[in-house]
Length: 292
Image (cartoon, rainbow, N blue to C red; front, side):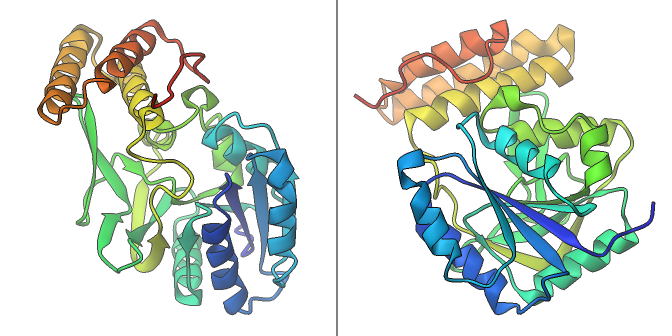
């Protein structure tokens, strides 16, 4: 494949305006030529606040395309953006991330060297502590995934910073939108790995990531989707004979943890997630996930 050394950065924004502006500032400060990259912004938040995105973008010189879509989830936003990208190099970058010119150049150099692989970055919190080195590992015995803080043979690349060719992205069937939120990049990368693509990490490409800017990682919303989608993932990719033991272990661990923390109202949410994950009730749930 002929490598086009131009990048389409795709970011999905859901109401996290301050964090999105921090990303724009970091891109603007790099003073890249307009022919070097394009920023594709897919906003899937409240349409009444769409003008906020336009106003923020107006302050910066970054070349961008802006789209508003209904919120069908992170995967849908990524797929929508990638389909409209004009360059072959795709960089999925969370809207609550910040990068530098060194990060940009290091990711580009690695892609030129490995154009048929999926690339990740060293992702750190704003205070500089490590969130993960590229992505994480899967535990098929207890049904969990865990981010890796050391260089390792990864099972998935974190969706906060994921680089891939557009042709491979489309060839893989894109990211499965039925997950709606959480585990979608895990499924995508695991499928890619089984088809022979390698997952690589550039430790010298540092991405600062503000976790949970768009969604509350402690909410019942997160509890439901992260649990349901984990079950759906292991049903799809794990051993069929070992699936129900995995689910049992996973749920016992989670429910005991919630009991110990006296988070009793989370238990029904876990049971809903269990049922829907086993039954394959994916996409946007119609269940009430309010805190009250």
